[in-house]
Length: 264
Length: 274
Ligand SMILES: Nc1ncnc2c1ncn2[C@@H]1O[C@H](COP(=O)(O)OP(=O)(O)OP(=O)(O)O)[C@@H](O)[C@H]1O
Ligand SMILES: [Mg+2]
Image (cartoon, rainbow over all chains, first blue to last red; front, top):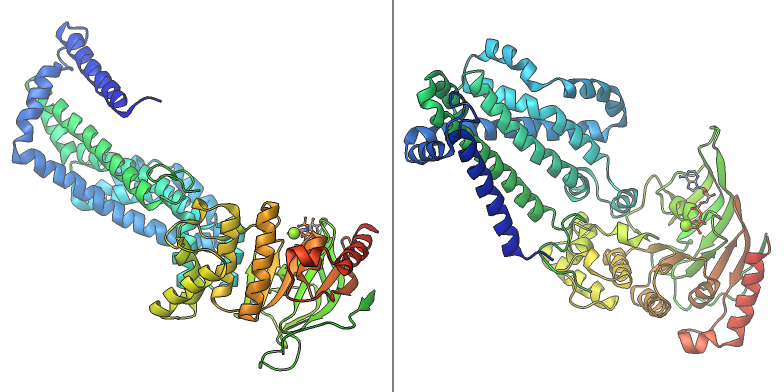
């Protein structure tokens, strides 16, 4: 057994090593100075930015687009996925179309979104919602259809029907699929939000990166600092979803005995 | 088909819900995948009746169609032909006053709900208020010999305990008729004896009519008022054997009774001779 403190020490060690490697490679000129700032200058730029209101405003705008997009795309996916999952006929008819639409990268509709909405928050929302809707819908459909036959019989015997059946049986049965889908959607959604800013020009971290890039080599550390912030945001978001999953799915095989010891 | 039903000692009066049998099955036939290449006749022709308060066991070789029969009788599976009446009425779906304890009890308990919440599900459906619900949950848990497990989750309990919970949940809404499909098949011998006695006691306490499927002939004789012997699939009733053993039964006394041995021998011959 690797003890907890050792594991943390190993992670910190690898992190420090990566930063050191970055510093060595950029300082010695292996990485071109025109495109890679040194680690130290980037970190100091980051330190400076953390104290500015601009950075936090940008973080807020990115997160807002992400969260609302998740809410809209996720909400629709749960409703549509449940309806399709419940009806075998609807499922059979619609699934080929969904499988095709799923493979269309969300980026492909970015030009369309820009034409319709311009460089706005709506454009960002549209891109995020659209991008997470299809894969999540598929997860929901499979989840809703994954009810164990014995559980289905049991629900029938106990007269669990209608909306109650959805809450007591269908949703918990689908929850493991839903959790995976949401965790992946959260990461995808964040990437799409940043893309909407970086390419589509909506306000947020991505636009900050674009602005810094256009400002020339002197702003290079600032640009990289913003990229780091974006990465960290991704780590935080994914971590939060995993923590929520651990809590809500504590009863599921994959999470059992992680926090509480098994009795008997 | 021969029927020996003389001298069935039902030691309780049928309850006040009418005089007819709780369950009456007439020429029940079940064909899976009818009309397709993989058509399979599971049940050919089964008829019998179950009176209120009776304990009926169904035995038959593996694959005889016992589970199929139980699913048809509880309204989970449509019949191909024939009739199955519960309290005089045909079933469109599972009647409210029917309980089922499944062969696969560990999958039948909802793993996302604690034990008390599992048991409370049928009570919530029936709009039992919160206080009465909590009282009933405690009561049935006590009845099945489980004390303070309400807050735990099904997967934290042993197999025998899970089976007790499944029985408790089925009893919680006080069904008139309880179906059980090989309920004690996957627990150890001692637990099995305990659960057999438990179900006999609970039957007396709750006055519930029980139809129990088993492949264990000893178990059938020990528990039943009557044993229905099925032939291999497509199944028919080979014989209905009345079990005239004294009540209340006890593992030590009943199983050493000469009559027990004779009945057991008779059933064994019926089941093994194919
Ligand atoms: N869903 C189904 N579709 C097609 N055939 C089925 C289905 N379920 C059961 N059968 C067939 O019907 C017959 C009876 O099966 P059933 O499960 O009722 O037997 P059983 O007596 O309960 O067996 P066991 O003692 O092993 O539990 C078997 O031959 C089985 O293959
Ligand atoms: Mg079976």
